[in-house]
Image (cartoon, rainbow, N blue to C red; front, side, top):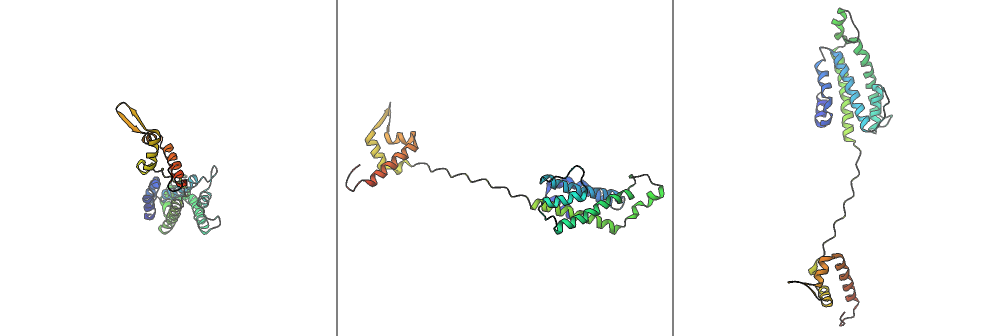
Length: 226
């Protein structure tokens, strides 16, 4: 059972299964029918959770065999693959466990006192270990496969890098041209040159005028002013 405990500790959201593990261990010798009942419930819970998370339909009252087979297929195991075949075989054992529980449970049907006394000895310790180990093996495989085969989520597209802020000081020729054309703007005690006003008020328009000015400079023959 330790391997199952380690798996539940590794994937903490599966720890709701721990009561099943505790009950299986607690009654292995004293009342194996309870261990059997909880082993079956453990497998069904794992299988149904996998199917629910992967959107696999199970119907209204599926057998444990159907639950496990559907869970393995939901995890992208081939329907005829080894893992599904083995799980189906173990699930068949799980179906038989239900019959075994009815035979040895003290509460499934009323029994004479001598049958109640001997019921727990009908399954030897080696067989008990085999049944529990089979349950643990399938549960661990399903949980690990579910966690390690999570569908890849599409990564959001990277946001475009913000445009670099314009640099007023990098366009001195244009600034001088613009200031010469439009002069300064006085507001009380404050005076601002035209290029600075344009830069502060509408940076996009400022850059557009810079580009037009620089293009015209490139087209002007040497020795001629704009």
